[in-house]
Amino acid sequence: MQRYSVFAVAREAMRHHRGWQRAWRSPEPRKRYDVVIVGAGGHGLATAYYLGRNHGIRNVAILEKGWLGGGNTGRNTTIIRSNYLQDASAAIYEKSRSLYETMSQDLNYNVMFSPRGVMMLAQTEHEKRGYLRTAHANGRQGVATEFIGPDRVKQLCPIIETRGPRYPVLGALWQPRAGTARHDAVAWGYARACSDMGMDIIQQCEVTGITSRQGHVTGVETSRGPIACGKLGLVAAGHSGVLSQMAGFRLPIESVALQALVSEPVKPCMDVVVMANTVHGYLSQSDKGEMVIGGGADGYNNYTQRGSFHHVEETVRALIETFPMLSRLNMLRQWGGIVDMTGDRSPILSRSPLAGCFVNCGWGTGGFKAIPGSGWAMAELMARGASTLADPFSLSRFAEGRFIDESVAAGVAH
Ligand SMILES: Cc1cc2nc3c(=O)[nH]c(=O)nc-3n(C[C@H](O)[C@H](O)[C@H](O)COP(=O)(O)OP(=O)(O)OC[C@H]3O[C@@H](n4cnc5c(N)ncnc54)[C@H](O)[C@@H]3O)c2cc1C
Image 1 (cartoon, rainbow, N blue to C red):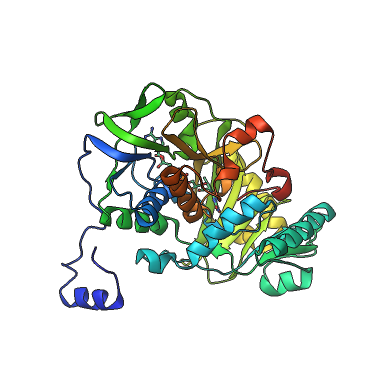
Image 2: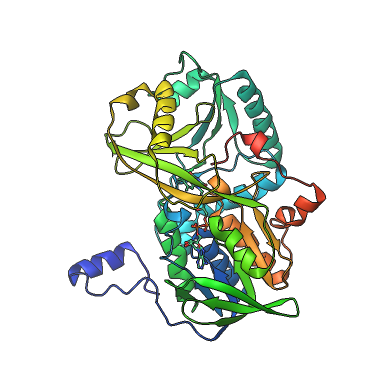
């Protein structure tokens, strides 16, 4: 792999940028791999990367029906935080956040991780009590967060109206080392590193069937022909239910469209991320100056990957209460992604009823932040059959009633 550095940029500048290599190969699929991963989103690519880096398993193919990073990985609002309530969640999300800190160096690819701090506003007494509880739990889990009062909120983010008429700001759960990263770069960085390890990333290759013999997975049928494998990882977010059906089992997830939008670019006006969960909207400013606004999920299950007017209206109306200056901005574009929701709003990292077939899904509205930690844990699970980080999130928790409830705890899970 050609190393990216300031010297490489200078050298290429001298020869009119003719020496850059392609970031990853686009090979024809081989007949068989030790491991096939379905879905070249962040979680699929990170799983492959850590299989190679941590476990030496490199005969791996990552199959993608569209283009890599074209699913939710390239459609999210890039919030990274680890201030979850439950111990199992805090462990995997904090592992993930810590891997983000060094990701650019690890991958030799600038993912623009920006630990600018995330605050989750408390706008009701109930929410305030909840965040005080989370701050206390985080202290015991080793996750650095604190509950801050309204004056500090205003100091950190002057454009907030803290004395709003309906929902005044009573404080916030503040995580100073949380932040954002460039979502495409995360997918591209992992893809480049996987390709460098000799793994095959095969785009425009839809998995249409899963084959098995005597209860053990043997391979996949694809739009580019059959591919045999020893182990299979299903990492397809909102389409996981479709794939598990091919493998002969059902997953306890629902698929819905989640939306976001951005405004026209403006001069720097906020350098933190703010989540206002009571009114339901979250906001950060991109490096280009656009206000990146996260909206709501559709109230019914569907696979329609698009934006819609009623969500824009609802989200912007809600945010204007807390950020009155937004009322004077033009909105540029909106979009949607198909997210995979479990009942307890926690992910599934698990073996499946089909031997050799593993699932990684259920990250719902908040899986971008989890990409490195999830890949790390899933790789360990696939390579060794068990993983301390992944084991609490197994499918068996639904049969055993052992939920990891982040829905009530967090109110919102982005
Ligand atoms: C609007 C929006 C805002 C969000 N905001 C945040 C946020 O601020 N912070 C946060 O942490 N998370 C956020 N999320 C959630 C986050 O984006 C997802 O949880 C995460 O990106 C999921 O990654 P993934 O790799 O599992 O899925 P994806 O990136 O969706 O990748 C799955 C891939 O599988 C492929 N695939 C599906 N079926 C097949 C098949 N049959 N054959 C081959 N390939 C197949 C798809 O094409 C896709 O590329 C947001 C999501 C949305 C939609």
